[in-house]
Amino acid sequence: MRGLKKYVVFILSFGLLYSIFQIVSGLLLTASFTPDFSSLSSKLSQETVFGQTSIMPFVAVLLVATFAYFLSQRIVKSS
Image (cartoon, rainbow, N blue to C red; front, side):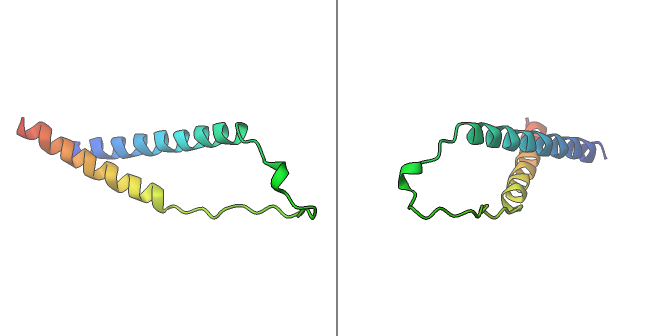
């Protein structure tokens, strides 16, 4: 049961740190973005288009973190 508690704490803290990192990096990338107005045609669009988002990268990172956690626990026990 103690191992499960360690795992839950690890995954929650990892998820929180991952989310904070994503937000901060997004803010920095947005702040440093300089649009290229020279390549625009004479007809400007008034429509804003956002890219699609997916939860799959986050799920993949959590799976890798889970594997890393259990691998580290196995290494520590064998030492």
